[in-house]
Structures are given as C-alpha cells and as structure tokens.
Image (cartoon, rainbow, N blue to C red; front, top):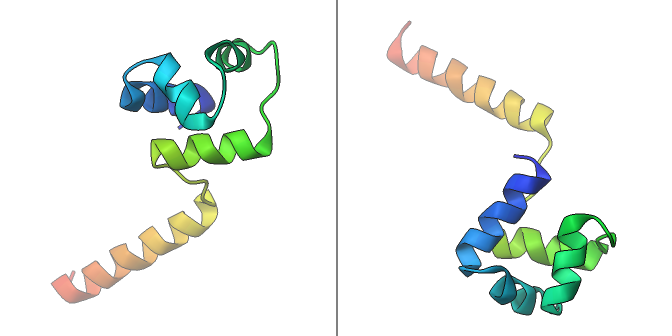
Length: 80
C-alpha cells in the first residue's frame, strides 16, 4: 500500500474529506493542503491517519519470514 491508497482508504471510511479532517483534528483546508503537497504532514497527523484507517507500518522482510515459516509448517502438517 502506498500513501495515496492510505489516504483513499481513510477518506472512504470517513465518507468525505471534511469528516476525515475533523477526525484528524485538522481544518478541512489544512487537510486539503496536506493532500495536495502544499504543506507537509507532521508525525502526529500521520500516526492519527494510520490509526483511523486501521493500518500500521510493518517490516516486509519480517512478515515474509513469518509467512515462509507458516508455509513450511503447513507443508509438514500436510505431509508434502
């Protein structure tokens, strides 16, 4: 997932951009400026956006290791 998809997911969940702005504690115009790139995002805002969208940042390498371990376990259990 990229940042644009994260924004899309959050706006979709909120129903409209104005509601998302309120959820993030921003004025609608402030959110609009951040989305357009006129103003940068602060860490607190990004964390709120991730939390609201129900997403978190994970290490792909760590997740891949876990998936491979689960696949190997299934192979053993299924006797393949």
